[in-house]
Length: 190
Image 1 (cartoon, rainbow, N blue to C red):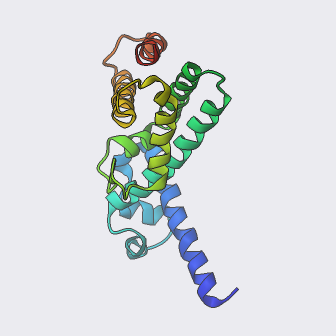
Image 2: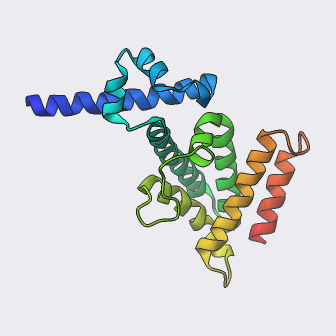
């Protein structure tokens, strides 16, 4: 391994350590706890080293979100792949999506609520973001009828995201989340 290759590898390792530490800190204490000063202390590097990898805190949140989109796409793809019928494929995606959001609340916030540098619904969107949307669209395409499948998917995803967010924030009847999700699936794929 050349000196240049070693330096690039060390840089990639530091980059991943920053992302991993930010994610772990956010899950443990919330995103308000994630500051460059706090991250520098956690990973035992100076703040200028962090700024050598990320322009600002939003760039760190963006990197965490991109990692999350990769994981969410994989979880939904695995669930969809096990379904035998088109209706079951969407129900499986809903279950995987909700399980992901519940298991990773801070990550979910980074992906869908916090300010990031991600270009949603744009050609230059990261592949992991496109893959996640693609999983939902693949499951819904058979149910779109004569509607544009991309727009239909955005509406369905919005409804799912709304249910998750309102339930998480205690804005919906406690204990009825499964009923709401089943009703959503029935409404969208019947």
